[in-house]
Amino acid sequence: MDSKKYWEGKHLEWITKDWIDKPTIFAQFALKYFPKKGKLLELGAGQGQDSRFFARKGYGVTATDFSDNALRLLEEKIIKEKVNIKIEKVDLSNNLPHKGNSFDVVYSHLALHYFDSKITRHIFEEINRILKKGGVLAALFNSMDDPEVKEFEKLEEGFYMSSSGITKRYFTVDSAKTFIQGIFDPIVLDSHGETYKDKINTLIRFIGKKV
Image (tube, rainbow, N blue to C red; front, side, top):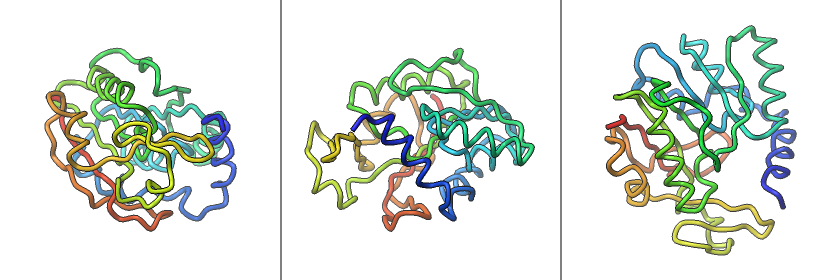
């Protein structure tokens, strides 16, 4: 299945879920490590529950996704809630369309782990480029503890493909270090992440500052 088609369907499926408009556990945890104000970019914002949360906290938020359904639903919600958020369509496999040193915070909740090692490394380099010096990256990743790993085809170390053709990367604390080394100083790097919608409570949490 084409990944874009997969995500278009997922966002229609999630409309009725009780967690879709609640700020995530990770967003609430990460907030205390952010500067008190500034410009925040969310990568893979989906329907924007975290973008809206951060905007209400006073950040200048830019929310990005590559799903048309996600962005349409997000736009409807920010109009209804009268929240000021800039929306952009962004494909993470390409260069980020932002100037260097533009953001105080880059945030991503379970959106940076769908790529091979080359693209994943490039994503981290792009995030580093657009962050201001001392800016914060906060990201939550899939964990190798996820039982679905055993059902998927291994394409490279940590990178798998499902029977439907969707690719996912699964991190450990150590593998996360290989992508951030030299460009971010870790503040938090552990395997204690969790979500409202999944039973796994060993997701990889990373919060760090641009070197």
